[in-house]
Length: 139
Image (tube, rainbow, N blue to C red; front, top):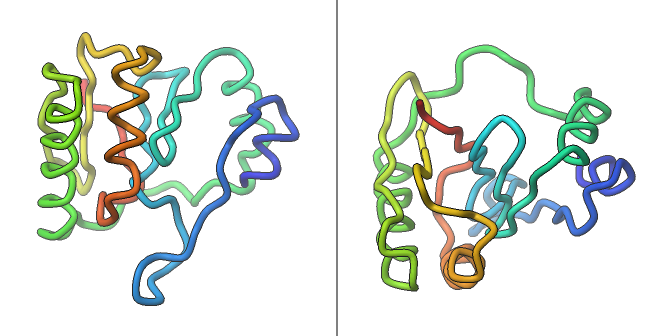
C-alpha cells in the first residue's frame, strides 16, 4: 500500500512496521481518517487531491470492507491516552475519541491537522505505541 500511495502522488507516506513483541504489521499510532480527503498516518498528516487519487489507485491494497472487528479495552485506553498526549503536547482542543460500531471515532472538530502545533504533538505522540489501528472519523 505504501509504495502505491507514494507512486500515486502521496510523497512521504510511511511504510508499515512490525508491532511490539512480534505483533502484526501495521501503522503504529494508527491510520486516522480525519475527513473525506485527509488522514493522519503515524503522526504524519496527508490531504488533498493527491490523497484522493492515490486512495482510488491503491484500492486493491486496502483492507476489505465489512464491519470492523470490535475495539478492545486496551485499544480504547490507548486512544484516550493518545488524545491526552496530544493535549499535553500543545493541542489543547484535541477531543477524546468515541467508540461505536467497532470503530474508534476520532473526529477532530476544529483542530487543524496541518498546523505546526498538531504536527509537533503528533510527532511526540505518534510512536507511543498501542494506539489502535484503523481509526475513522465520527460525524
